[in-house]
Image (cartoon, rainbow, N blue to C red; front, side):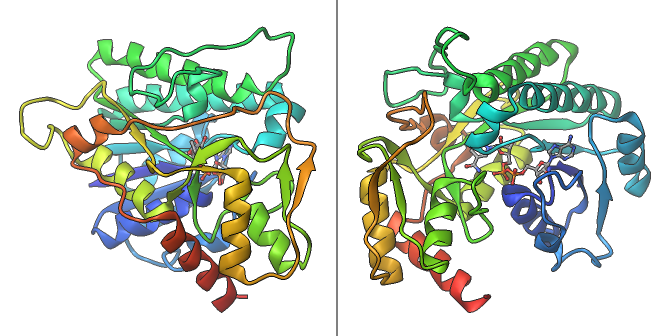
Length: 327
Ligand SMILES: NC(=O)c1ccc[n+]([C@@H]2O[C@H](COP(=O)([O-])OP(=O)(O)OC[C@H]3O[C@@H](n4cnc5c(N)ncnc54)[C@H](O)[C@@H]3O)[C@@H](O)[C@H]2O)c1
């Protein structure tokens, strides 16, 4: 297949491009390098089946440049977005602008090219929904916009999902994938990064791991290989595993069922790295952070045949090994 991956130099996008090339597809990866790292694509950048386009995917001329590479696309994985909690508060309008407009633009391109479309949404699209686990069709609950800007991101993903559902009416074949806290060795660990990346970064810099609040907030961390498998299946399958159902319009939660508190995570990172520096608990976190986020993945399991196969302990050990073998 000819596949377009937006956000290709990002954390998930770079692994996805590598996997699609490995599977024999022609892949164009586009990224404006706002957060992406071109080096993530080092293993495929010279591959004859791969092209990298640097630019903002909400610009027509950038989409034209993507199209010119192999001519149209049968599949688009739309991952370009501004992700990373600190941005949600600091740059709420940019988050809304980029996340909504790149989605509208790529949806229109998919309609033009007749491509299948996979939208990288997020569990944040459920807002502050308190009922766990989050089902594929749980309702979203957002607090008053007076309170904080955290939901610039979740709100943008919710609007993206609405736009995708609306585009089905034009005949677009589209699916929604919601990864639950993906982690891997390319996860950035700077102040704008995500928790596992930041904790490993702290250990490597010989600093203490920071635990926001009392650390009782929980997440379901999902190894990058499992996340990539979810995207690949969501992009490849036209029907459910049993052949009974078309997958267009479906959404898939892609996450581990292992719910872990952030305090527990910090302890596991101490164990896997052997650091002698104790975590610091009670560090001020981000206002409005969700307390729990647990997926129900039954649609992904039943319709895609997806299974989460990497336990947190195995995954953390693998990531630490990769980080320390490539300094
Ligand atoms: N990492 C996770 O755990 C997670 C969880 C839920 C959802 N997601 C979603 O999955 C997708 C990928 O996430 P990630 O963790 O790899 O994030 P990331 O920040 O590493 O990747 C996003 C990429 O998009 C690029 N980008 C931003 N604006 C762009 C634009 N206008 N044009 C072209 N490229 C642009 C960035 O430079 C970056 O490389 C995002 O849509 C994110 O919201 C990720």
